[in-house]
Length: 198
Image 1 (cartoon, rainbow, N blue to C red):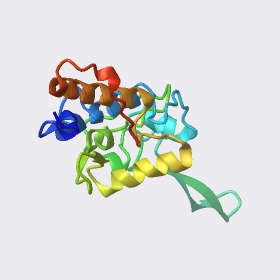
Image 2: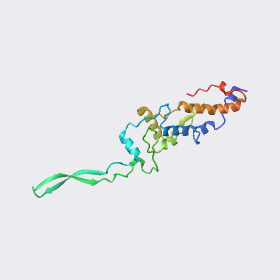
Image 3: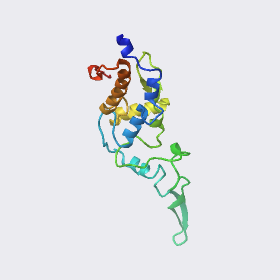
Image 4: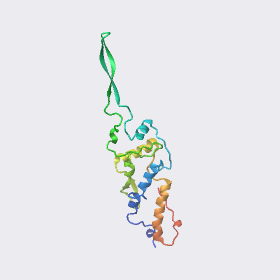
């Protein structure tokens, strides 16, 4: 048996592993994030913005009273003077109105006990396999350019990293590869094969 035959993976292996099932890289990353675990093996990050925490806990709805203040002029009969007085008016964008960027969203995650990179979930659910320039390699991409920028921005600015694979998820990939190699090599122990994931 040739070495290339031993190390051959079945058609569709990478596509199936990338996304589309509960046992896929996309799902592992999503579930890790929901539990506050990042792909750089760190966990339990705390949100830095108190304002963001308030909005997220409230489903991205406004938390202010919605009362605005302006100034008008009022005539004082006793003094005969015109005085500037504060005038209060109702702001249409008041309490109970969702922020513009999140209008139309059916649900948002309200967990603020740790950073979970999950607000609407679109970014994490949108992770998928991209076109790889090399055979037998897996390239994971985001569904939209906006989501990709958001992920890189969070990694670079805040150290919230969902890019790459954690040590645990790397081991999961190795296990699935070894399972396929074992089918190819029969009685040869898979312990003799060393897989390095970069």
